Image (cartoon, rainbow, N blue to C red):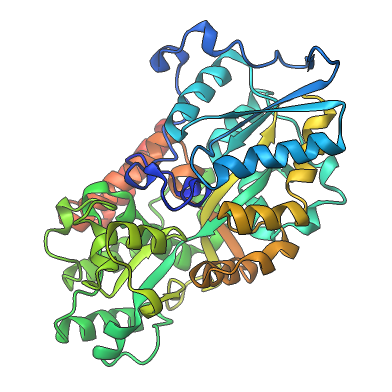
Length: 447
């Protein structure tokens, strides 16, 4: 998927340049492919070693991706606040642009060295680092801390009953819709079932309204439809079974393809959608933000990108969860999304965990939410979220009954890319639902 980091959108703030660059994958590879020299690796401690500065303070190196305001300033401020209360510790923030960060961390992972604290998106990449023995098990440290988090926010970082990172941001995908266009088409309330959703699409078409904005060129937006349909049919447990068995030819995935094919057959997307990007002036977000389409399926970043790429539709913008599918195992309260967190290298000084406990306390998270434009991950910080649109997403996360990590993050990068490519082909009419399922399974089993 192209380069624009979902988790980094609000971490970076509304003016982030990453609006036109979107990817959380292609994270692990070889150091030689990245092309970084030894100088790029020397900043991090060897596993098990702690460093001190000239004043005898324990140095904790902290790599993050907050390179634009407001979080660019908030992160160092939080580090200074911790140092003031802990004068024997120096927090050394290292801010890196998203793609540069991924490249450098790939090289460090290959070398067996990692920063004391580093940004992670969880899922398969974090699991590979865990399996390599590079990541500290934070489970013991969470005994009195875990219950303070929004439950869904921890799930991307948990494996085999253990937790290896703590969240700093969390988000979810759903339908953003234009209330005025719904009213014009005679749709009194957002659809709650897939059958009702298709009826809504037909009503919008009949009223001369483009039902859905889609960035067909970038592929990942279309993937959301297939993945969400599979989640609603299989449920979270069924999705995990497919991931574990590397088999996506089951009924849930075939039906997801059939339902998506039916939707495509209604011709619901804007003219030229196959060549449309996401955040460009004529892309998906602009079509939605300029009131030219009634819906788009996107994450919590959507309102900001709509206003950035287009004009934004203000109070006419609403949000509703992906509808239920008749006979499906998944609940309408099962969430599809992701976020960002912080992991600690194996053998890092105790001060690294102490800092994270400070950084992700309720008091501190309120600062991150109110000043840093983050989604709250600490329960007691949710009252600091004042943005009307983000409160919709926060409410969905608070009552979620299951959490499915973005497939292109939960799975190895080659599998995620195949899902994006195959679903895009299905939407374009060049692949059948069966061919999508077989292609994804073939790539999954090859990993």
